[in-house]
Amino acid sequence: MSVKYIFITGGVVSSLGKGLTSASIGMLLEHCGHKIAMLKLDPYLNVDPGTMNPFQHGEVYVTDDGAETDLDLGHYYRYTNSPLSRASNTTSGQLYDTVIKKERKGDYLGKTVQVIPHITDEIKQRILACANQDKDIRVVLVEIGGTVGDIESLPFLEAIRQFRYERKKDCINIHLTYVPYLKAAGEVKTKPAQHSAQVLRGIGIFPDIMLCRCENPLSSEIKEKISLFCNVPEESVFDERDVLQTIYEVPLDLHNQGLDQMICKMLDLPAKKPDLTDWKKMVHTVTHPKGKVVVGIVGKYIDHQDAYKSVFEALHHGAAACGVKLELRKFESDKLKDFEECDGFVVPGGFGERGWEGMIRCAKYCRENKIPYFGICLGMQVMIVEFARNVLGLQDADSTEMNINTPHPVISLLSQQKNVQNLGGTMRLGAYPCELVDNSLAKNAYGQSLISERHRHRYEFNNEYKKAMEAAGMLFSGTLQRGNLCEISEIKDHPWMLGVQFHPEFKSKPLHAHPLFKDFIASLVCEEAPI
Image: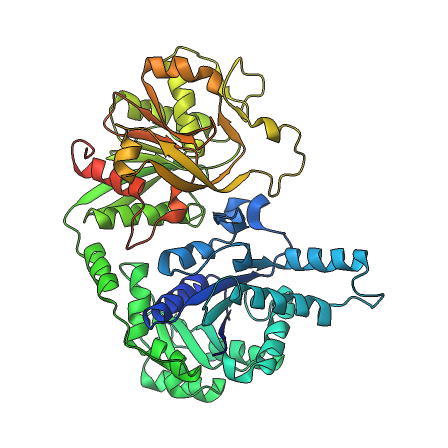
């Protein structure tokens, strides 16, 4: 059977949740028995988000093969089993870079290079490449970033129009739009949704399904109105109401409305009734906790809710696995003065010296007061520098990222990084194997000796200080396989103080909490971490 394609577009405003919606649909289709793949098309001209400010773009999600991608791929990973790789995220920057390189090589045989057909053809090739990255893929979900009407999105929409024209029976478009409730008027307004569908039709794409973000479920009268003015059958108008308790309710709500069965019908796919028992059980655990833990997040980008998206979600997964409610308290590391009462602290990744000293104060506070501490990437480096300063007595110890002239560079640049001038795509990126030592928090959490985790960093622990730190009570419990790079460090005389050079948050799922996040939360529930 031919591969089926679902194109998800957005209208009216950004931040409607296309990524979360796409992931939810993918999850439902998997439970209907179909193998899926997911692709995010991003209109910006950056080659990837690797050099973009987290305040503008949010987190950078890294795949096993080292691709720096959009944060929506984190949603895809958490909700589905879709293969995720470089083939799962395409930007305008990548497209233009590829086409221009082909033109310089003479691949176009002297033809005038234009958006149509050269850019649009390249977009279509990326869609097909996503479909072919694994065996037996039956459905490809393609999410188009931005909002219909944005000038930078036009090449993607034109490519989709062509793609659908060439495969009429194998494609549908789901249009996610906004239906606001105006409190002053006391009415739900459909005009924004009508206009976004009209813009889409003007491009040549007719939505097959309308998904309407709204505060409360839409009445049949409102759905009938949207159906009439958007030229979509009423049974193909669904509401996606604001979820009050957890985002993991979204696929259950869409399933209860019959969206998965409608999609299978439209694409002529077998519509097996999905077994959502495990998912429902997880949601019930999240919404009916037996206790509460309070975790402080000490970071550089706290004001942007998406900058640490995967970290927040992984903590929620760990809390769900322990059957407790998670309360997050956020601390801007460059404004940190006092620590509120928290059961434990997490210091996530980041770049640059802003807030560095505040993070070090957090690590010192946790070490001296025996409070659980979880350092991720930069957070591990913070833990090591604090230990060097206040346990080894190396008062000027630092990272060369923060102080190039430090007399004690306990964290320093990788030797292969020293001559690198370009910033994009030049870090240690992707999955690396790590060997764990016995009788360690890490080995206890993972339950195995060899693991694989994803990295995104340039600076590493300086092994010249390893023996002195081990003698003073530091345990280097994880090391790069067939190498000597430190991957995990722990404080021996402490209930739970651990740092990792990698990003474990990228591999956590709501049904399978990452072992380190689960163990960290467990250490907050119990007086001591489980052994």
